Image (cartoon, rainbow, N blue to C red; front, side, top):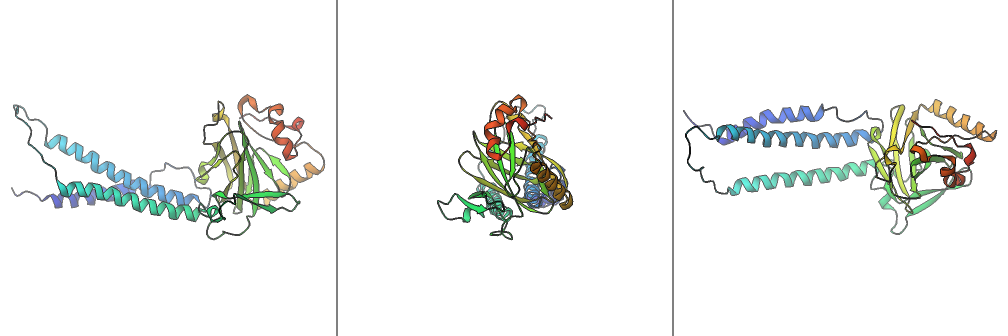
Length: 314
């Protein structure tokens, strides 16, 4: 019986493994729903990495199983194993392939990060950590110099909506400087270019919305930026992804993506309530630490009377 060349076995294995890994990499259903303009970019990169990981897993584990069968110890075989020396070509191959993969993924990830706006804040002059923009009410909103900013298409253009986000132990507070509205939930219109100016008063927090595929740290003393476009109306969780204390797991809120009409109605209702002197509700969920007394030092700067705070526990 003629021996089949190793190259032919390798080609056959590649023809079997490639479609399997590609199908699994594109149909894994491991990620939540896409709800932002940036999400498909991240998912595409994740799918490629997952496809490569599946292929490598099948190659490595398949080789182990084949070798377990082919080179198993036969009954009555008490001799030493066949001496095996190094194979220079094989060593070059298994060193070169991972190197090429890492370099290609690295270049691709930088391109994705740039398309998401990750390189835009870095274009600010050195030493200029933040710039001030005057709002309609005369107040100033800080435009941070680091974070995820505008995409190449929106770079240099003002955002449709600016929201100042403050992280504290253990809550997220949202302030709309253009209208003076303060809330414990983030409300944005679908399709709008939204800029979040992130800050923290105590420790490092991390603002993460899984459905948006976006995460940005909120740093004490260093303003950061997160800019996105929501594409799917709905309610999505906001999670602190940085261990920030004993009640870190309870530091949650939600982002509500409205249609433009619903968002305008929400703005109008809150502005009317503010003009009529009705109490503003700040929804938070920092376990038992979200009392009016606890939040008072933070919300006073936002124009919210601590006596009007309402705790909402989920």
